[in-house]
Each structure stands twice: as C-alpha cells, then as structure tokens.
Length: 94
Image (cartoon, rainbow, N blue to C red; front, side, top):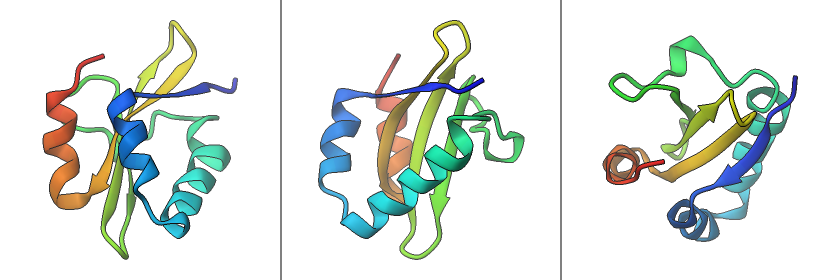
C-alpha cells in the first residue's frame, strides 16, 4: 500500500530554502522507501506518536514526518538542520 504525501505550511517554507541537492536526497528516500513503508522503528521519534525522521549525515539535515494510517497520509512536519528540526517539530501540531 502506498501513502500520499502532504506538507505542513511551515515545513513548506523550510523546504523552499533547502539546497536542491538536499531536496533531491530527501525526495529519493521518500519515494523509494517511506511512502511505501513509512514506519521504520529505528527512525521513530520518542515522545511523539506516529512521528519519524529521515536523516542526511553530510550536511546534517533532518526531515520529520507524521504517519496517519486512517488517511493513508505521510505529512512532512519539519525539515531543517539537525540542531533546529526537533525544536521546530515540537512547536507544530497536527
């Protein structure tokens, strides 16, 4: 089963500021893996139910997303540098 993709309005602004090479890496990971099987146990974010991350190591960026099985939807909640993404994520609600 394939999931649909949505993006939080604030995350959309963050996405627009990313370098194209970083966007490409996130897109590949989403299309090839996370829209097919979004729940990856090792990437689950503790304290936030149904929320997971995709990480890029060099440079250090994170994309946090929420999975809704009822809506068959993966929603990008925050995308930023490793230092900022978790704070941004905690500010946003679904």
